Image (cartoon, rainbow, N blue to C red):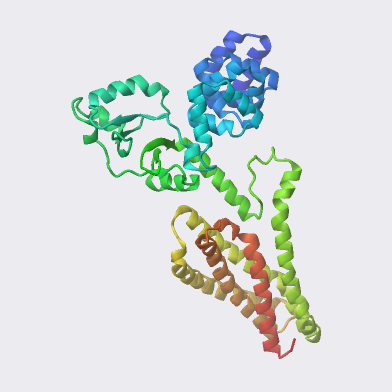
Length: 455
């Protein structure tokens, strides 16, 4: 779809004041595209265009707008209009929106809400942040034991327009304990007289209300589900989480991991909407920690200062190879840690696999170390004025550094996971700093032994 062309046509109708034609043109678009168009308008025009939308479309469009624009729009609408939108939204979307609003606006919204709706929203808001209870919805179809297929179909026809999904139906007993699930396809193909429990799958995959949203997303991904039931600690069904919310969780968690791997505190806002001060603050703590930790690297060089001075030409040769050695070690450690962190995120590996992972990475390290060390030896010997002994020392240090870097890079994320820390914390910056210090110790230890110079 050529969005720019459609935008120009909508702009022309808006400027000409042809509200009826504009309304008709908007209703022919997808709700996502309408929300994208509204983002191109100023506040006054947004309010006018939004009020043109039919009631059933406006709530869907509102759910796809960004938080800043939704907040501005909500503040511009009167209480009745605002609550109409909230009432039309699915409960998970409404809760997600309300928790982003300022406390004063939320209080005003809930004060004008229907008491039952207000109680329901408050109940959702009481669940822990980033839990299954916060992202679940109650707009699903359930049946009790004894319901026939004919009765189920009649209920589906009556209530389906108000449900977020009807692909999966849930079977409960009299205490609302979840007994099983039934696919809509099975119901459509079954005889009207059959009971719903005869069709259900009793191997239910579910999560609890207090489970972390990342666990929910991992479970949905693992079992290829379009939705997953959420039960309380007595196995009673209280809601479901649908795949559209799972996609949002995956995006949010991946963004958080990327920020941690880059040594930054996670940010809840997008890059362009985050202030300069907040961006600086998110980066400062880890930069400070890494700067201080890098002092150990400088301390190692200072410790061997006398060695470098007494070795004369050899010392200069060794110092000139330090950047290459540190960069190679840091890159090797980053490669190993990235693969392990990714494997942990996908559930492919766990801390108990540390032995297998370390053995595999050590074999990879030996292969890479041998090849890179040989290439480095030939490069120094043939293309520099340094001696063969210097080439050997640097190449041997490189081999040892690669082996150590691969071991550190593969085991640190596993160790973090074992003590319930985010493995993403053990990414490139931290591993590079550790490997830098290790590579210097290796290089100077080998050099002092090889050339018989004392510290």
